[in-house]
Length: 158
Ligand SMILES: Cc1cc2nc3c(=O)[nH]c(=O)nc-3n(C[C@H](O)[C@H](O)[C@H](O)COP(=O)(O)O)c2cc1C
Image (cartoon, rainbow, N blue to C red; front, top):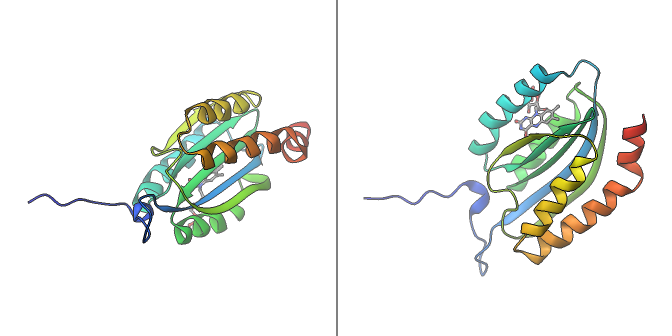
């Protein structure tokens, strides 16, 4: 007998074939103590915790700046947000967007990229080019606008 397994974030809500996802996007400046080994430790924790809780996304680190996209069930993502906010490895933390929507996952597999700060933009442009869901394309357009506005440039110049 085969059993179909759904992660908690992929339970379709009534009348929709797509899941209800809580999507969180932030950028932060890493404290001086964060080196490659520390980033590897963060990634290890994320790879253990996130799949079990139905969370997927993307973590980008470059130029001393973290950029993270998280999507999954509301409770799991907001619990993780509370942990992230009190994590001492963040020198400053800027929440760029927080949104609950019925949509396909933009990053169905957890991934991590080491890039320069300016390349973060290219990561988002690629994601936008591949987005099937118009809501995702729109979210990424807004994100690109946010990246070009105050929060990230203040972090980059800090
Ligand atoms: C940039 C950054 C990204 C992180 N991303 C995740 C993540 O995706 N998933 C996760 O479980 N922990 C992540 N963490 C670690 C959390 O901040 C926190 O250490 C972890 O949830 C354990 O929380 P606790 O020590 O309060 O129990 C991240 C930390 C940093 C600095």
